[in-house]
Length: 92
Picture 1 (cartoon, rainbow, N blue to C red):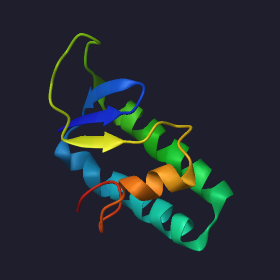
Picture 2 (picture 1 turned 180 degrees about the vertical axis):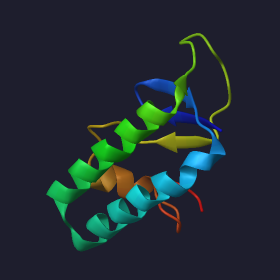
Picture 3 (picture 1 turned 180 degrees about the horizontal axis):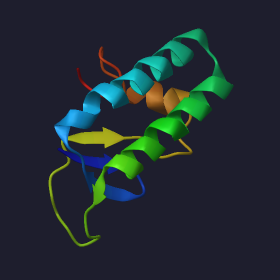
Picture 4 (picture 1 turned 45 degrees about the horizontal axis):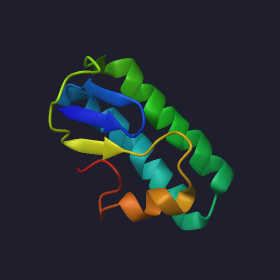
């Protein structure tokens, strides 16, 4: 799956990693619902770091359609809330 981190670029991520990423996504959703801005910021950074760690970066000139778009590391709680689906940022 091709994942875009807003403001950074794209990575190719194996589907096998999504169970691990969904745990962080669920944690992020709980923190957002509880208004925990400090926890939200830490978990957002942990999620993006894990995507960077597990994914293979695509060249900057690659024009692959992104199947998943994640917020930038400096996104606000409200900006991320607007990006959420019922499943959080990551489907499943």
